Figure (cartoon, rainbow, N blue to C red):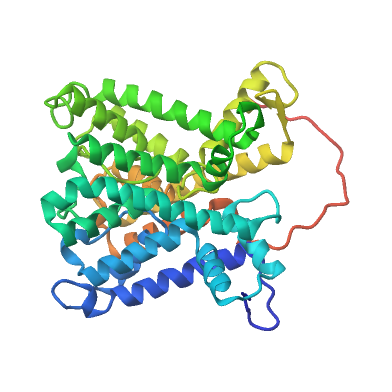
Length: 448
């Protein structure tokens, strides 16, 4: 496999990734713009095709037209393929094709793969790519098999099987696209433990990252687990447990969500509302009818997202965990950030801080611009939409379908930035890093 660029231009791995995603998005938009892609056999406005293609490739789930009723099976299959490519990364698929064709994997290809898979080193990347694809298809097939026990009796063999595969891919890739129509997501299955738990665990598995699951597969004791895996697992578990408890409390007496459900339904919905915002976009209860506290908690979870090197978006759980432990270390008077009796380098902390600040600035900027373009929408709705797009979540309070032309462009760009990664995007647009040989004198600034 060889990544060719125009002569005279040397692209960095992060730039290749950014351009690669853009090419996939444009290809998807062109395919969705074909009359065969809709149920009525007419062309969809290109801006909507571009928006949905961006949302699918960036595994977000925000849509301006209803996925279940607007698109034909051709259109739905295009969306599913975009979700798969976007979730796993186009480099994984390019590597698979290259291996099948017997092509050589060059050093530059490996550098791009390293960036795409968030790997620590170049060693074993091709083997890692094979593992990613095999693991993904195995989990997705298992998820589809479980959901087929519910969908086949309801929709028939062919439609039930297709629904099972589509939703398994969408859940594992943390996309949040559904085929049930009328923007209802999985609200009709709020009391169905098989559907809710299967989708939940597909989201969690996809959101933990391939590196973590590779270590779990080769598990040889907790002491052998890397610090990254320990941090990713512990922060994910913390967010799910605390999120479920808080959602249960916030929505317990809310008639618009879980008040009138059975205890099983309440627990499943609270659990699902804690899992899905990081960063799948399915919902089993009405997001617009949630309490203010519930919507605010959802916004926080959407911004954090899943784990690095996974199908999820957001600033990532490891980033949030590092920043929290840094603050804790400062309070304790420690010079370094310490986690599980390990010291974290300053460079990693700076990178975590940069990712968080860039993410916050992007969400704030997008919210401010939307406040100008989307007349009549409340600040809460705008912030929720901007955070959902940045975190590639797909949850909405109903604003997506009402977006103006400019609003659709802004949200599409935010989804793209959120999927490629705020820091990756910044590096792709910046000049090559150079070492600074000049050291300025140190001084003091009052903070806090």
